[in-house]
Length: 214
Ligand SMILES: [Mg+2]
Image (tube, rainbow, N blue to C red; front, top):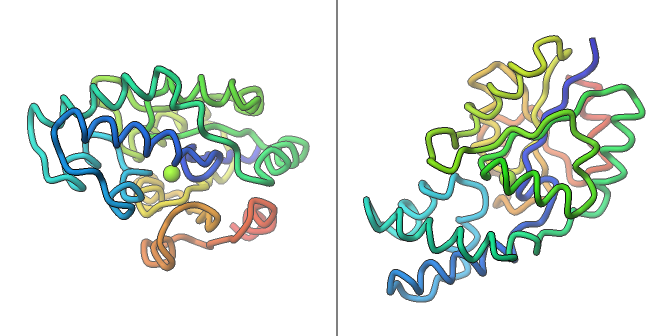
């Protein structure tokens, strides 16, 4: 048995905000909405896309579908690659792997996009699996992608999720997993602790010590 460490992608492994924000602006323009505020843009990093557009812009039904389509067209055309890894992430993954851990990604981003981004930034080979959302939106919540990762690695020892938003903490908890809060991500102060993260760390370099306590 090896330690199973699951990672969220956006806001945890990579700073995907620039490409996400550009795509949200395009989608808002497409729907004739006012230019998104900085707070609205920040709120769109993390949640499943459909849920984010509905909650942040107050749109429903077909408008959500139109927003998602416009977003994805811009995103897939290249904006998604505007997502550099956070400093220290590559070193963290290498350290965990050297210590014998099995690493996998559990993300609300479509799986195909997640794989493409990880390949682009040179991190894909670190992961035994990438588990993400389906394009039809049926699989998109954190508990669903965590379930897929756990099913793929049933022998994983004391699985843990590392994630940057409340939905990571809550999705992990559905399966009884503790969550290490990625305090270097975009969450407002207190969000991860309030959601019940087992521990919140400020840098990727602090993750191994946090893992040792869980
Ligand atoms: Mg995230």
